[in-house]
Length: 233
Image (cartoon, rainbow, N blue to C red; front, side, top):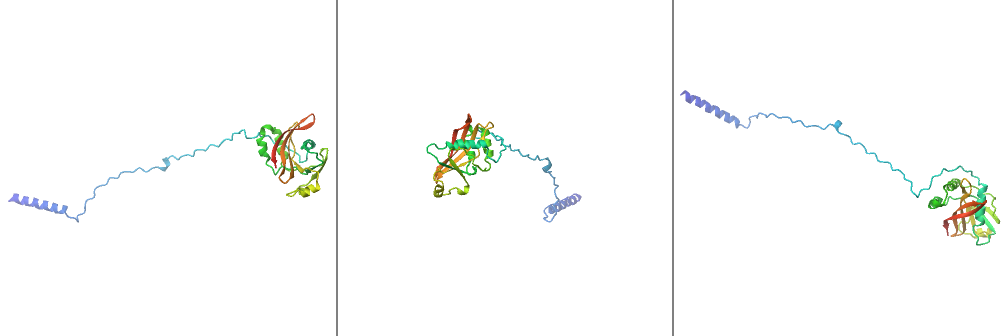
């Protein structure tokens, strides 16, 4: 009898346990969670990329560059030796015709021409000291005076008298002149036995020429040694 009573109680206990496991309203016991540490990157330990310096290019002189010569200090007044160069050059400018009158612009001027181009193109034939003196003197215009020795009559005129398009008025006033001449200042070497000068000679609309002329001095006389054509029409 006692055995049956104990067996009955065990069965009742098992039924109670089974019914509680199947009850949907029962609160489940939470399972313990295990925290897994995640490594956070540190900004202080991250290397910062440094800028790579860009090398500065070095200018390498090429054969197209002219030698740099210090610019001399020059006077705005045209020197006596410059008139000697002018006179020698103009007197032998055009030997094909007999000239009775020479008309010369009364101010030196090279502003309308790109002389640097022609000098660079002929740099091997032009002494650097002469080029430097020529460039320094021609930074501005200088007045010309009546100090030429040409062997013929000459006259100085201002820019206001220059013909623009029609040359009729010019030749009506100066019928014996082969156009007019405009000059630059003369550049010399230190010993003043080499000279560089520009001379232009317009004669009519689309007629004339201009040139850079290199001269040398022998026995006190200036001679043309090289002419560099700048323009012709």
